[in-house]
Amino acid sequence: MVVGADRIAANGDNREQDRDLTPSPSSRAEHEIPFYVAAPLSTIDLNTPDGDHIPIEERNPREVTHVGASQLAPKGALIWIRRSM
Image 1: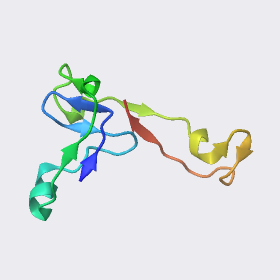
Image 2: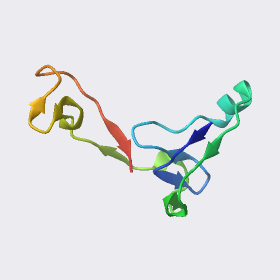
Image 3: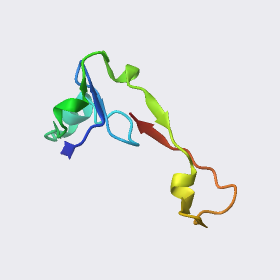
Image 4: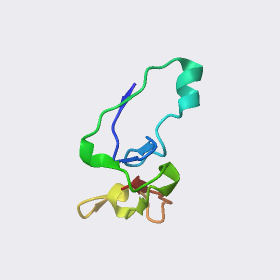
């Protein structure tokens, strides 16, 4: 499995956009899936000790309910967007 990362903490924990922490070491071991993170060196943040300290950016729900001025989702649809920074 190859995943990307928006930020990699000092201990190797990483986050990619709207996903929580990428698959844990236990899931890799249990399922014997090779696991690689493909990311530029600029995503490594040695000042962030672990994934619990990676900030989460709250996004505007309009990003998924609209395309330009056109509304795609019903008015009042509940949207929850989290994105790692």
